[in-house]
Length: 202
Ligand code: ITT
Image (tube, rainbow, N blue to C red; front, side, top):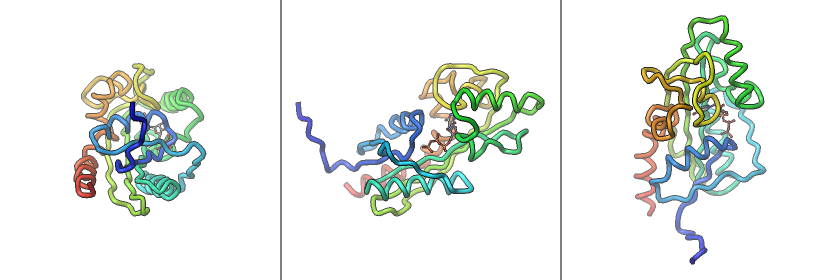
C-alpha cells in the first residue's frame, strides 16, 4: 500500500475546536479535491468579534496564519426571541457543557410562551496568504422544544425544532439536517465558489 501523502492536493484546515462542527464540515466538503485537516491541538483562538461574521474572520485568519494553509471557520449560534436574541454569539459560552447549556436555556425559557428561535452561521474561507476569499451566511428558523428530543448531532440540536418539520435537528440524520440547517444553507452558497476556485488553481 502507498502511504505517501500527495503534496499537490490543497489542504484546508478546519478552524474549529468543536468536534461536532468538524465532523459536519468533513461531510459537507467531501466532494472537493482537497484534504481536510483539523486545526492544531494547541491553538486557542479568542472570539473577540461582535458578530458571527467578525468571529468567523478572526478564527479563519488566525488558523491560516499559524498553519500556512487554506482555512475555513464557522461562527454560529442560537438566538431566542423571548430572550432578546440570547445566547447568540455567546452560544458556546452560555454554560460549560452541551447538557448544561440545554438545561439552562430550557430553564430561562420556562416563563415564556413564545419559543421562537433561529440558528445563524457565518463561514469564512481564507487563503494560505491570509487573504479572505469567501464569506457567506445561513439562517434556520424554528422553536425551542419543551424537552430534548433525538440523539443525532451536537450542541443545542435536541431542543431546536425546525420550522414546518416537527423534527428537532437531533431527530434528523446529517443528510436532512444539511438541507435545513444554517450551516448547510451557508454551505450551499459557499460550495459553487469553492468548486470554481479549486478548479481554477488546479
Ligand atoms: P469553534 O469556535 O472552535 O468553532 P465553538 O463550539 O466555540 O467552536 P462557536 O463559537 O461558533 O463554536 O459556538 C457555536 C455554539 O452554538 C456551539 O458551541 C453550539 O453550542 C451551538 N451550535 C452551533 N451550530 C450548531 C448546530 O448545528 N447544532 C447545535 N448547536 C449548534
